[in-house]
Amino acid sequence: MKKVVKLTVNGQPYELYIKPKTLLIEVLRDHLQLTGAKRGCETGSCGACTVILDGMAVKSCSILAIQADGGEVTTVEGLAKGNELHPLQKAFLDHGAVQCGFCTSGMLMSSKALLDENPNLDKQQIKEGIDGHICRCTGYNSIVRALTDVVKGEYKEVK
Amino acid sequence: MIRDFEYFAPKTLDEALTLLDKYRDECKVIAGGQSLIILMRQGLVAPKYVIDIKRISELNYISAGKDGVKIGAVTTHRAIEKSPVMKNGLIVLAEMEKRLSYIETRNWGTIGGNLCNANPAGDPAPVLMALNASVKMASVRGERTMAIEDFFVDSHKTALEPGELLIEIQIPPVPPHTGTAYNKFGIIEGHAAIVGVAFSITLQSGDGVCDNVRIALGASATTAIRAKKAEEVLIGKKVTNTLLKKAGETAMAEAKPLSDISASDKYRRELVRVMVARAGNEAFARAKQA
Image (cartoon, rainbow over all chains, first blue to last red; front, top):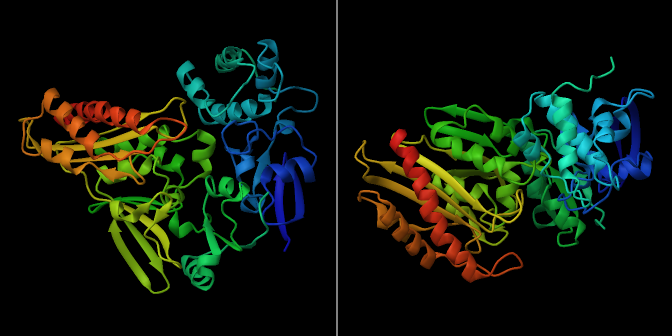
C-alpha cells in the first residue's frame, strides 16, 4: 500500500507516492534522478550513500524514506551555488582528493556536516569524522589535507 | 529486496502499544532501523507490519535526577555521546558511544533499537551491565522493569514478550570512589567489537581496597555477560596489577565465546584475559581520582 511522503531535497519540495519499504537512497536516485549519492555496500558500512537529513549526516541506504517524511535532505547536488563550487568541493579538486569518485559525494556530505557542527576540527577529529567512509582508491591522506585546508580558512564560501 | 509491509507511525506510546498488541508476532518495531533494515534487505526478517516508534517524542529524552539517569528508548546514540550528563562515572557511556559504528549511524540509530537487536557484540549492553542498569518495558497490560542482564536471553533474543516494548533505560547513581572504563578490541574502527570489556569498580575510601566491582563482557558468549567469578577475585581486596591479571584469567574461564569470521573462540578468550586486566587498570586509576 503506497503512502504520500513529503521531502524537501536541495531546497526543492517534493510529494512522493511510494511504498513504505522504499529506502531514502532509492527515492533520491530512482525517483528524483539525483544520482550523486551512491549505492555501495548497502549495509551502512561504506558511507557512499551519505546525505544530510535535517542537519545530520546519515546513510541513506539504511533509512526508509517514509521515516524522513517532512524532512530536509541535502545531497551532493545541493552543495554548489549555481556554477560556484562549495569550498569543500574546490579543496577536494585542488588536493586530488577525487580519484575514481565513488566515495566522493559521501565524503563531501559527511565533511559538510562535520564542519557545520565544528568549524575548528583538528586532524584527529577529521580522521575520526570520516571513519564511516571507505575510499577504495585509498586516497584518505589527500581528503584529510583538503579538509584541513578548509578548516584553515583557505577556501571561503561564496555568499 | 525488502518484502512489502504495512507501515504505522503512531504518535504516542499508547497508540504504539495498542498496535503492538494487535499485531504481536506479525509485526516488527522500527526505531532507527540501523540493524533492522539490513536484516530486512537480506530477507532474514520479513514482517507483515512495521511499527515506527522513532518519532514518539515521549520516548526521546535523557534525564538526570537523584535516582540516577533515565534514557528514553528512541534516544539516538549521538545524543548520548554528546550529552553533558555523561560525565564522571558515566563518561564511559559517551566513550562507548563514540566507538559504536560511525557518526552517520549514531545520528539515526537509537539505544533502544541497539539493545532490542541483542547482538552479542553490541557495545552498549556490557557498559550498561557494568553500570548496573535496568530496562523498563511496557505493554497494554502495564509496565515492568528488570536488570539489563536478564533482558538478553540468547543471541538476538530478548526477554520482551509479544506486544511488549522497551521504553526506558535506567542507570542508578554512580557511587563515590567509582571508576568506569570500556575496552573494545576490533580490527577496523567502527566495526563490531571482537571482544568488549566494561568495568566499574568502587573503592572503599582512598585505601585502594575494592568495595564493589562489576565486570561485563561483550562478544564473549551468545549474549553480553557478567564475569561474576572474576568480580569475586577483587571484592574486599587491595587492588593491584597482579590481582587484576588474576581477575582476567578468571574471566577467561567464564567466557564462552563463539568462533566466527572475525576471530576464533580461543583468540577471543585470550582477549578477555588481557582486556579485563587493562580495563580494570583504567577503571581503577579513575576510581582513585573520583
